[in-house]
Amino acid sequence: MNAIFHRVSIRKYQEKPVEQEKIITMLKAAMAAPSACNQQPWEYYVVTNKEKIEELSRTSPYASCAKDAPLVFVACARKEEGIIAPSYIEIDMSASVENLLLEADALNLGAVWLGIAPEQERMEAVRKVIDLPEKLYAFALLPCGYPAEERPQENRYEESRVHYLK
Ligand SMILES: Cc1cc2nc3c(=O)[nH]c(=O)nc-3n(C[C@H](O)[C@H](O)[C@H](O)COP(=O)(O)O)c2cc1C
Image 1 (tube, rainbow, N blue to C red):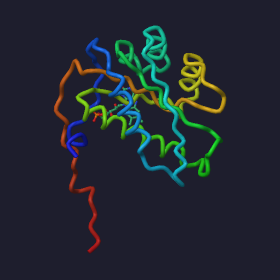
Image 2: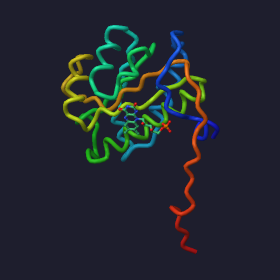
Image 3: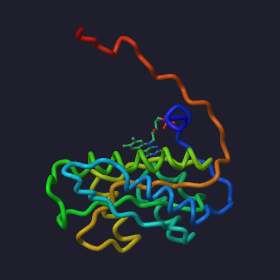
């Protein structure tokens, strides 16, 4: 898959808005992820409101790059409804977020994963900005847009970290 070997974190974006069709395709990718017992704990907020985006960029000390993004996905997790394996929720969320990032790359968009959970302070800050209902919690911010920076992916393959048992 080309996106796997092309995706890098993109933190600078063109002003151009992201087409609704592409937004839906990224969300479909996010929701196509595997999850424990197929519990699909994810819900996504799609934020294009400039004021809200600015507020989101201040919910973590490492989220300032979200400020100029035309779009920020807030990946959220359900705490109870339909949750069979609670200890796997954040593992499931990670698979979903990675799927979304890869699809963004495949659509010639750029995005970055900004960590929110498990930092309580950041999670509460995001909750306030988007008025999250109690049954959900914020897992990550994913600013997204047409890239205004370019960088080749580094090769991280380390043969010494592979162990064959033959
Ligand atoms: C769980 C997680 C949390 C991250 N949080 C942040 C963050 O808060 N701010 C940021 O700029 N990048 C964040 N990143 C992006 C990483 O810095 C980035 O993935 C890493 O440096 C590797 O670079 P690459 O994505 O270009 O391959 C996060 C990535 C992950 C997986």
